[in-house]
Length: 194
Length: 194
DNA sequence: GTTAGCATGTAAGGAGTTACATGATTTT
DNA sequence: AAAATCATGTAACTCCTTACATGCTAAC
Image (cartoon, rainbow over all chains, first blue to last red; front, side, top):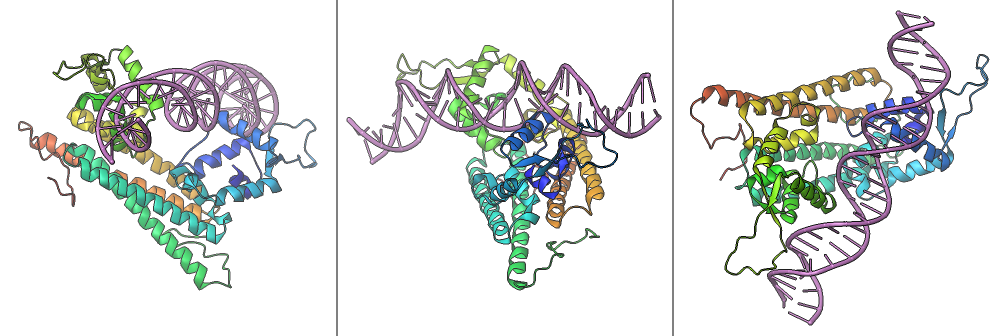
């Protein structure tokens, strides 16, 4: 939520829609948790109500939408969270959220997160492969097929991470002094950029 | 848990280890939920305590391990659950569990579950692609890359399902009268089978 | 005989959902 | 003006985890 509000001020209802679309693959939140969360962030001073700009046509008692914006403290906390190491940044959700806001993250931290995620996946692969070897003869072929598919998915993600890491390194060393604001896109093939 | 106990009677501690290895990719359970669950299944009569076989060396008050076995009612309930249609059988967890016990599931139900999962994934892909087209120009390249990777993962699973479905259909029509207990393995490439 | 790991259990609490309640704005 | 949808919020509940408490069994 802090990450989305960093982009632009928003009200809760829209926040939820964006949450579903940006993090849709990982997680969505119901209003039952979203609004209490906004409340707490407000109490902690990380976000603030945008005062309703006194535009010509605005009615006095207009209190339907409540637009929140990120405070300076909120910005600090956001970058603290995005840069945080540890288990929370390696699991599916934690990594996904951090990656989604890579655009607002320092290059060295990006690299650390990508590498952390890769190590974690490699550990998991080793564990699965070990269990694989141990139980190979005792499980039916469906279980085997499932495990194989899972393993290949993880292998695929590791290859993806390798590409991203290579691209990050290249950008780091190759264009040290000349930041290129565009061209942030790591080796893509088809998606037409506008 | 019913599925694992269908394989062979077990005590809670071991049940948890198997749960982690079979469903590891999807979910693991802590003892704090496992033992209460066993208790409830016992109360509902779906499992029963295996009476400690009076082996020569067994002491009287031996109450360290409690081995549970599936009752007839438990077996019924298991097959009812595995064959159940609806959302619970299409999400990641639900499908994973059902697939893991395909060996104990009727062929027509297997097919229905595979096809249900495929439809669900295809719906999701359509939704993501739509969001993709809508927001393409407004998101940074990292978000785009993430969505692309997610989409490709789903596409990969759909291809996997297609293979499985084809294999199921083949087995259904091709070898109607002659069940081949081995050769259950659908078109695999590398894994050496013992 | 003491440490390490097996084995069972419970109580407190975190995190999020569902279902409900309410009102404002836009569309038909 | 009715219906749909936008928008905010709360209370009860579900599900699971963490942390703790307890004893057994095997190894050194």
